[in-house]
Image 1 (spheres, rainbow, N blue to C red):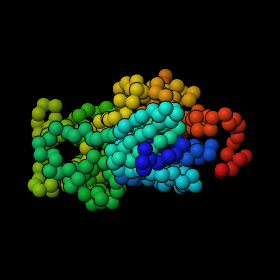
Image 2: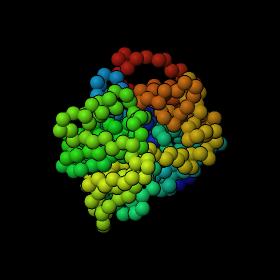
Image 3: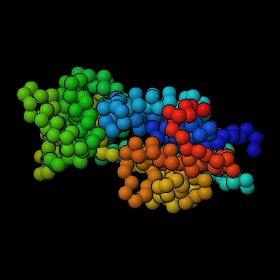
Image 4: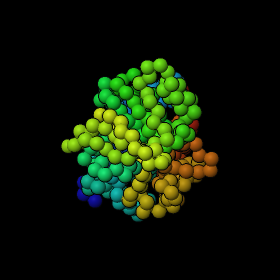
Length: 338
C-alpha cells in the first residue's frame, strides 16, 4: 500500500506503560510507532493530573505525574519512537505474511509484526453532574481535571466527589486556594484511608481553609457567561445551601470507551481485554495488551504491574519480529543499551 509506514511494533497508547513498552522493545532491538488519541504523550498523567504526586513508583518516594512522563519519554528517546498523536487507531488488518496493518482516524497506515495495546481505560470522558446549564461553565469555572495548581490560587473552590481524585486535590490545593469546600453525599469516602484521615484532620484544624460539606450533593450553579458566582448544594432532606465560589472541580469518574478496538476480536469484557499473564497475548493473533486495559485473574491495577507486563509482551513479541533468532535474557546492567 502506498505511503505505508513500516516498523516492528505498534503501540496504542502513549501513557506511562506505553512509553515504557517503547524502552522494553528497544532493549530487544525492536522499533516502535506509537498511536494516541491525545495531542500529547502521557495519557491520564498528562491530561488529568500532571501536578499530582505518585507514590508507588520504585526508587521514587514521590514523583509528580508530569515528571514521571518526562523521565519515561527520555528513557524511550534513544530508541527513536515515532509518535502519531491526536489520532485514533481504527482499522486492523491481518496481512497474508502474518503481519498486521493499522489505519488511524487521520489516514495514517502502519504495518508491524505485532501490536501492543496500552490504552489504559481507553478513550475517556468525564461523568458530568446533572446540573442545568453546566456546559456554559465548563473550562471556565467548572473543571473535571487540574492541569496547574496555580490556576486556583486565591480562589474559592468547591470540590465534589468521594474518590481519590477529590480527596487528593483537596489536599493538594489546600495551601493554594483561598477556601476549599469538599462536597460529598455521605461521610464515607472511596479514597485511600490515609488521605481521608489527613483531609478530615486538616478540616478540623483551627483556621482551616478546608470545609467538609457533608452529606450534601450538587444542586445548581449560579453565575452568568461562564463566570461562576456560587454553587447551590442540597442535603438529603432537600434543604438547599448556597456556597459562594469561583470554581467547581467535579470528580465523578470517567466513562471508558475502547472505540474501534472493541471490533478487533480480543474478546473484550467490561472495557477490559483478557490476556495470558505470561505473555500478555490477547485472543487476537499478534495483538498484546498491557496496563490497566489488560485483565487476568488477580490482576493488580498498578503502574508497576503495567511496567512488568510491557516487558513480558516485548519478550513474547521478539520471535515474531526476529523469527528463528534465539533470545538470551540478560540484565540491562550486563548488556547496556543496544
